[in-house]
Length: 277
Image (cartoon, rainbow, N blue to C red; front, side):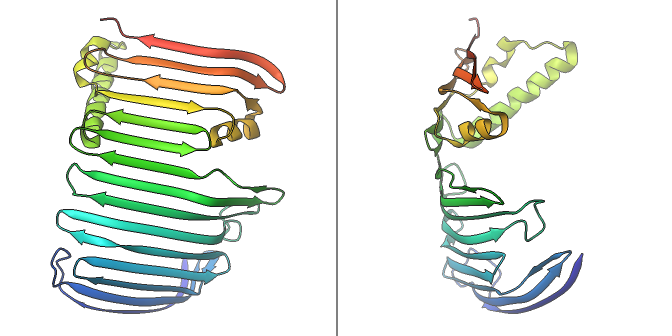
C-alpha cells in the first residue's frame, strides 16, 4: 500500500488536440519521497516539452537503488510518428526493492528508434548493450541484444541477434496481415479439435501466411548459456527453418547437434515435417 508521497509537479500549456500544431505543453516535476509497501523512492526529476509536433522528455533518478537517465524525443503528427528512447541505467538493485530473494542488480544501455504512419508502414530498432548482472557470487556480462522490425504493405522482416544466435522472420505482407492469418488459422485449429480431436491440415492451407522463419545458434549466445547454467546441457549447433504458405502448406526442419549433459554425449536430434500436396 502507498504510505506517503512527497512530490512537486508544474504543468502549463494550451490545447488538447495532440495533432494540432498550436498545441503546446511544458512539464516539470520531482519526487522527493514516495513510500510503497517496503520500498522507498526519492531524488527523481522529470522534465518535458511538446511544441509544434515535437516532444522531448527526460527523467533523471539519483536514487541509489535506481540510478538512471531516460530520454524520449521525437515528432508526433496525425499520420506520422518518429521517436527515440535512450535509457542509461547505471544501477537497479532489485534485491534492494525486495523484488528478489537473493542479491541481484543490473545495469545497461537501451537505444530504441521507432517510425510509423499508423497504417502499414512501421520500423522499430532496439539495441540493449553494456549489460551487466551482478549476483551475490557472480558477475555476468550478457551479449548485446539487437531487434530490428520493418513492415510495409508487401514485405515484413523481423530479426533478433545476440552473440551467434540469429532469429529471422520474413513475409510477403505486412505484419498485421500475417498476424490476422495466424490468428484465423489458430481459431480454425481450435474448432477442428473441438469437433473430433483431429486436425485437417489441408483445410488450413488458405489461412497460412507466406513467410519464412529461421533460427541459428552455436555456443556463444543466451540460449546456450541458460541451458548450460540451469540444466548442464550443451550443444554444438542449432538450426530451425519453418516456411508455411498457402501453396505448399507447412514445411519444418530442425536440428540440435551433439547434445551433451554432464559430459555424457546424448545424441543429435533432427526433425523434418512436410505437408502432402
